[in-house]
Length: 418
Image 1 (cartoon, helix red, strand yellow):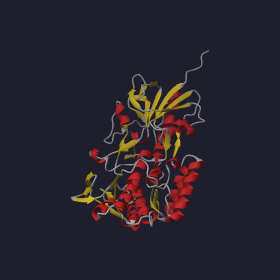
Image 2: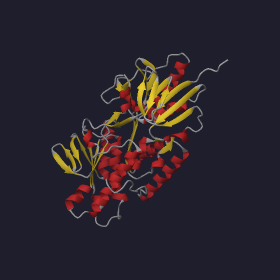
Image 3: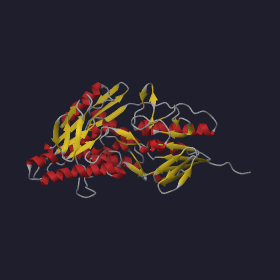
């Protein structure tokens, strides 16, 4: 008697959704191929710490092959998906390989959105990958070096003028940490400039920062940012960005360093499907996260457009993890001939750090700000890091930074150009 064939599952993306689905599918008679353009899983909530020299790249990332080394039914492929044939149930890779699947999960995440101004991307980089973080770190550190070497007061001021566009968690974290670097980390390290005179401005087009938080916590976050030395500008969008600076309303502001944290767009992979997408490019999925007309194709994480109780499920790590685990259960149900249940997102609350001993926490009515919120944020992020080594290294680095104000990952990589 021939052994039953194994179910072939292809998962695209080794982020939170893809990795959690892969781990949950460690079952008999299932063969998983996990495809990602990079060889590592990235803990994105701490990516800003790499960008601001608080942590090194390996502290918040781990090789996918190492993470899945004991899961024998998984093959990890380093590659890029360039085509999907839903009728033939195959995916094409950039290297020419074609992989067949019984079930397909697309979880390739999101990229930057410049709201129709893609020409800004070169002068206002965003933060989604380790490459982005290292590029931003280089840009920040070189700005102080250029200011130190500059004789023209106006040009020096432009190098010491920093802007972060977008008042969500990433923008708040970047702005607060950048102000700390200027006022504490770089103290007494330069001879011709005073880094504490750097101007850090956080720009939010809406009426308040951290709009997903209760208004009271948004206001506390604003006050904590201002206490750190961040200038918070709300209610006016940026209308232009170039290599010389940015325009806020009708006013041009000379600034050599502008960082983008204002919007995200879904991975272009969603466009390969014959499926409806929302304005951000996210795929509109069925209640069980499958694609309409293709119950064997699932979409999860930032690539999926999911509504619950009339509100969109947020593009955060807990939601992606829950989607990945749900897709694994849905596939198991389909294999067993059962109808999969609808996805239900469990919202555990919002966290955002602002700077040293400053954060805000909203746990469904239980609100914290300041030092207690900062400790809560720190404990939660260390707990959810993958791997004991990463947790230990991050704790040691944070403890050292707390007592010394130092950030020893301040190494400029990739040349001396911003």
